[in-house]
Image (cartoon, rainbow, N blue to C red):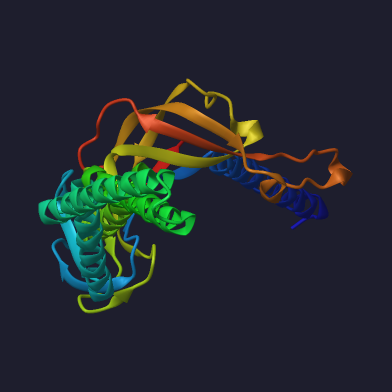
Length: 327
């Protein structure tokens, strides 16, 4: 083979190798570019946690994970013996306060009023006799029959009976009028305070029967029957399946067509089909999610945004955690 032929073969080989490298580079470039433009997210759903205002022991679980519950359904029953004893004690205190209020409002018994009235009559009779005795002594003193001391003794006895009349009448008025207004108000306030305490305990005891506040699916049940749960500790989580959305983390240079109010198409691998979605939320994720560029090539930092979008129409079978892909 001539040197010229060898040279041509080498040249062709170099050209062929160069062409292959260029072709692979072009294919790789477009492939990587396509992957970079693919945005993946997942389906999320609102949840609320069922918890109790009291620490207690779980005695019954009426639902299990996966069950669908409606508003008013009983979810769990707890037992709090200490609070039940507290309720009984406060009910007894309230009964005593109400009895005291009734006694204060009713005033003295009829027998007490009648006895006080009779004492007034006796005191008035004694005062009448003492007045007559004093008048006679005054006349005798004027005639010089008795000394001034005798007259003064009769006067003192008369005044003493008048004081007895006033005291007896005061006791009679007190028995007839009953307790003072301040005492009545105090008894009424004590009764109201004890009743309020009973109501507070009753409302807390209602917490021992946990009722569903929203319609949804039980996603997690944390304690087992017989276990203790602390104050405010979650008993279960319920997913509100009617409030579902997709969340995507999107670099800001890929936000075109994903602004608030925009509609786009997302691919659901679980169903192997596309669905229409509408953006309703867009927020910067902060510096921790910033894509850092190398300054040598003149590039710049790019922030990442959290994008949330809801399906435009209800999609049967769509579940939390399913992947969503934007191409």
